[in-house]
Image (cartoon, rainbow, N blue to C red; front, top):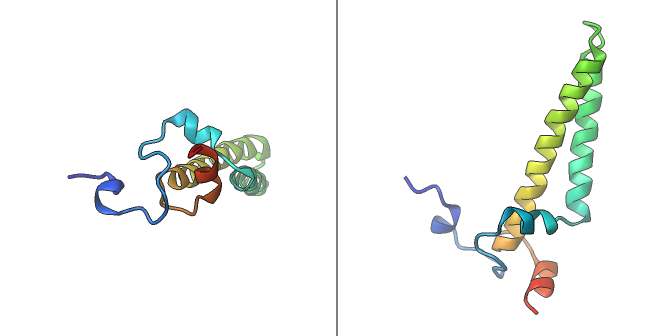
Length: 100
């Protein structure tokens, strides 16, 4: 079974890099990606704290929630950044930066 999305879906926008490496994808994070990452992390820390009030484990619950939010926020930002580089999301800034 072929799970490569590029084999079944054609990009709607110009392709900057068909298979971007990890370092290029992370370096391509923009302000909105970082905003989403930190918002998801902050909300997760808050939810972790509030869910630990009743059993009186606020600290460990808050740290666990924060780590889960940090990983989820990073994956969401990474997905958006890679999608822009591969041409699946609007990518005017990336085309201007990398197609010189």
